[in-house]
Length: 386
Length: 160
Image 1 (spheres, rainbow over the protein chains, first blue to last red):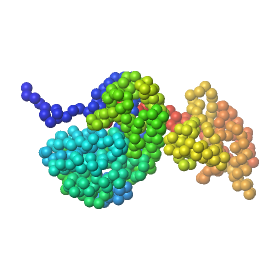
Image 2: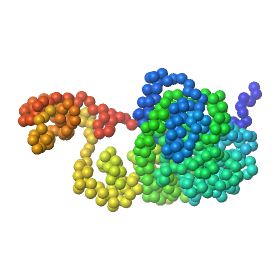
Image 3: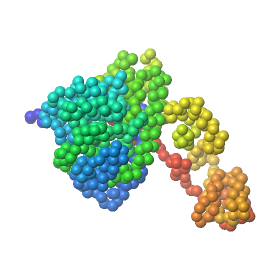
Image 4: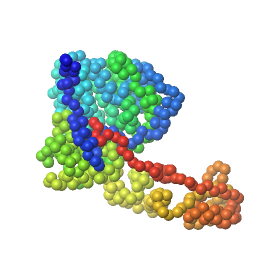
């Protein structure tokens, strides 16, 4: 028989998290700080709207780009949160999670050989999606001393005449880093000068603990070259509903809708009805969850200070990214030993790019009680190694 | 800062001042002073424990009693409310809008004890026009806490 597989797919290495998960799943009583999703249930009024839509028999396809009612609410949200104007009919598409948005944005814009700049450590799907879209990924290794923000120098050094897109993953998973307005202002002239488009993954945009998140699309000259990716998973604790969206220039969104209509048809209908409620009446829920995450973040930062573990203070998402280089182990070894000895699961930093080695990702989407137990374990583990 | 302190201790009154200050990102001494001030001003009136008595061997009966009363001149409802809340078995007294005036929560060891309180003490009180007693059969949620909730984390152990 001939080889049934695509060389391109074979060439993509599987996510480093999988292997680690398999080992942790075999063990009993593991305490995990390895989860990349909120611990809160979706607020009840949002779930209730989803259930109600089922009761009313709203069980059909929606239009390819998604319910117009939802797109209008997204446009309202963009206006009130960022001051951005979008046309709900032409510049918004509802996707299956933010991840589909990233995939189809890349596929809509890439010609073979185009270069896509991907700052790392960052979410695991950017590089494979770029490869699947026939782009050449160009990795920028972000640095702890810059608090894992993208600097103008780093960006400039990565640009060639083939560079077409920058993926901008802030607030960042796994580092918790943010890009403030001043950081964005430093890179915008370079993007414009080199005619580079931006796919800005702002899925954690509601979860910042300093100033309010600023989208790069709000800076002069950027809205027309930015695909803004967002969704409901993190802000509204709706990961399982699989619902995201993209806003951007009409010519790009039109092509994204084309891919989406042939590959997906439309995002889940029940989720879309629930999401309308989330955007209409969910601001308060988001504020409460944000407050809760912020308390846990402070708790962890304090715990690290007390055990003398070096970590820059992250102001976004729900992750901290402490440095474990002082123990002379790779991230994989550190995480594996921590799992074996303390039954505490964290994610090795290199799962998010080679430059994440020397760090571990700790999620604080857990109750304070659980975080306390986990920090005791981590403290024990560390003190044995000093 | 008060609002934030209260939001936390309303759910967890046992939290230490140190933990409280860490979670709020505030100075420990300031948090302590604020707590003390709120206690003195009567903003914080007590620190209680939520107990699911159903899970103990102690027998307890709780009743909600609607009471219609005649307000007294100059005192309104306060006079009678005070006479009622002085009974230790009365755990709460609210003045209510609508079809009746006071809503009382009463705790007793048995149905008999509660009904004897109502028939002998409450309904014979001067100014009490009528009472309606509702016995609580099961508490599902109290003070924002779901009583029988087993916490289970349904998430995968590790996700990107």
